[in-house]
Amino acid sequence: MTKLHINKLTPAWKIILNQIGLPYTETDSVEAELVLMNTYSAGMENLQQPGIILTPKVASQFLKYKIYPQKSIFLQGEFADLNPLDLHTNFYLFKEAKLLKSGIQRYKNFWILPFAIEDVIIKNKNQRKKFYAERYELPSEIVSKVSKGNIRRWLQRVFLKILQENHKIYVRYSHLPQPEQNLFIFRIDTDFANLNEVEQLYELLEKYEIKASWYIEATAETKLMKFYRKLQENNHEVGLHCFRHRVFKDYDRNLQNMLQGKTILQKNGIFPRGFVAPFGEWNENLDLAIQELGFDYSSEFSLNYDDLPFYPYTGNKFSANLQIPIHPISIGRLRRSHFTEQEMIEYFRFVLKQKGAYQEPLIIYHHPGHKHWQVLEAIFQEVQAWPKQTMLEYANWWRQRQEAEILNETTEIPFYMQKEDKYTYTKDLKVTTSKLNWQLVKSGKPVMNPNLRKWSWRDWLYNFEAWRGKVKK
Image (cartoon, rainbow, N blue to C red):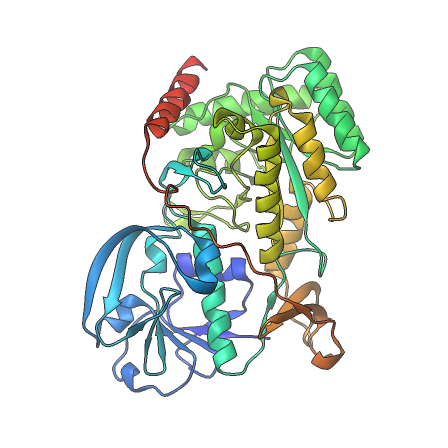
């Protein structure tokens, strides 16, 4: 099992290392396959151990550097599928170090990170961002300002390259419950849907044997509530979306809004364990209300998107609420950007292939009122062979993964292993590697559209529409 030693474990590093799935220890010892120096001590620059990673704060203690504020960077080569890397922080360039296409810098036996993980991973700001498609007008949504998921993938590859250079096998916990298979999760936000629309969606899900996660606007009429209770009885997950379709800045109104919604659902025989906020919004007071009401998890893409689950760090402590990021572009956003149905299908095929290459779950969401059943059917056909879970099932598995302990190098949580350009899964690290089923690693598609981070008049228009929609509600 690949082990990482870090000499100062901060909340940001704890989040990202738990997501990646590398066992780590906070220690000054350099006797490990990967060593991360996050605080400086005298003589550190003389270490000869291979595989030592320096944060910019540490490298700046003995190397000359310049600082360049960077909003977004575009990587080259094998890292180009992670573009754009949205940082919104300082980028360090070290005079004596060699800058690689990946953005990492090399100095002697050291690998130097160009930005501080603490400055990006626990940032909670959001903005409208465009998402890649092979057309001029791109879809957009208000999401986390920092692309935390791509930063985590970038760091995973840095770890992998260091281990490959030192002829080591990369071993971590899997991001998927079932080895060598992807995972599809379908989330449904029911706000403003009518009975006919939700019944049509349910029939389509039944056709493809998909159990979805439905999040209910609690002001729905009685006949809809009866239908949602039927969903729960048929092993679909039914969670809470809202009472009023709003997220407030203060704790009291968030709590009251959610409590009203949860109480109505419970009176109708529905017992929600998950919550997703209107508009994908998140703030610290919303998180406090979610914890107070005892939800098992929530999912807000203004905090994070296209990433793995994590516990937010807010108010100088970790939240007890597990956050499950999803892909934030829905059919509704594609429709607003004037996509044809065929273009919508091609868009989701691209997202699906990227997630498949990354060995990560594909979690998308839909509003029944937006219909486009042919697009959904095409997506369901694409993932027909994939395992399916609800959001709650994945949340429960993720908790087991995070709490897993290695006993005699075996565990119920699968291990992902990679050497050079091949990967495999195993639950037993004692097995001879030659006996495992090794497969070629898939690569994500390079993303180089120059319009991705160019501001346009449409961004202003869509921000105005989002503001107007919230005021009306």
